[in-house]
Amino acid sequence: MTGVKAATVLAGLMVSEQPRPEFEQALSPFAPLIGSWDLDVSWYDDDGQVVRETKGEWHFAYALDGRAVADIWITPSRARREVDGDGEWGLSIRLYDPELNAFRSTWMGPKYALVMTFVGHTGDNSITLEANEPKSAKTRWMFTDLSPTGFNWRNEDEDADGNIIVRQRFVGRRAQL
Image 1 (tube, one colour):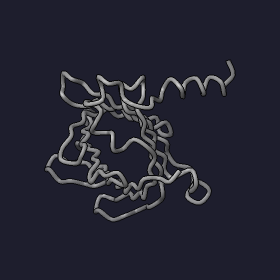
Image 2 (cartoon, helix red, strand yellow):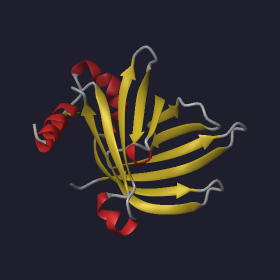
Image 3 (cartoon, helix red, strand yellow):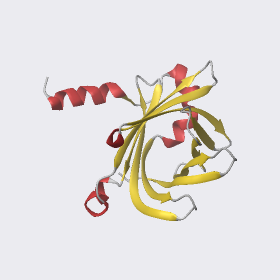
Image 4 (tube, helix red, strand yellow):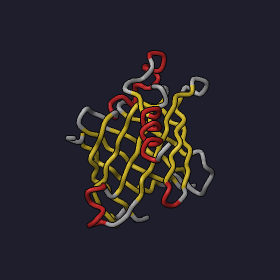
């Protein structure tokens, strides 16, 4: 099998048009995110000052026979690579764990060989994913203000004293493909 044919087969097996009926309710918190998004991306230093900004993109789909949600974010966006340089592509697989009554999420960033696992819970118009890895700070990724046309996302750390340090913010707008 050629690389192109293998990629086509893998893509067809990976992505699903809809959730399986028995997973529809469980995956419903991510339903507003299904599709493609343009991003305004900001990185912050420890003092909360913006140190870098660029454009990005984020793509969400049902996956694995409609049993999960997968997403790929790219920063800088493919359109900005010539201006902003090479960045990172990240892949997440999110699935519902009925025993936890929560989502399990694994993010992989190949540029730096990073893998992070999270447990996620939903709130009022929000999804909060808390990292499982023990480190000096608790890491949270939060989707807020979810709507059909946009959302906000932030990556924050909470130190041992309870201080919140925002590391990244994304403002997402539904992409016009």
